[in-house]
Amino acid sequence: MGAKIKAYFVESYHELKRVNWPTRQETMQLTLVVISFSLAVAVFLGLLDIGFSRGLGALIF
Image (cartoon, rainbow, N blue to C red; front, side, top):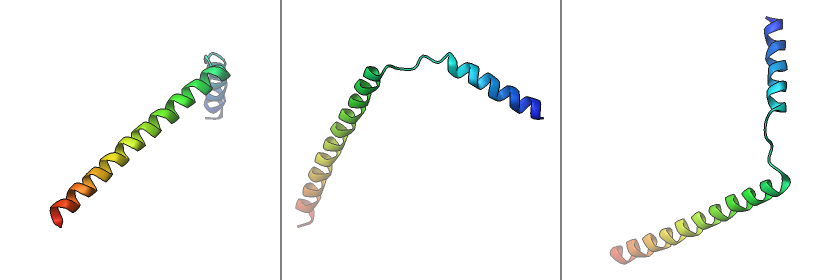
């Protein structure tokens, strides 16, 4: 059992060495894309919420 666990960690280590890690610039660009998309979705949903609230308020009163 111990040999299997050791083999797992050794293989995992070798696999991580083969990973193509993004550069710092790529990471920054992709982070900005995610933040921008998240803000756009938040604004869109906020506008929908305001619209539905006002529409429902107009129907009730």
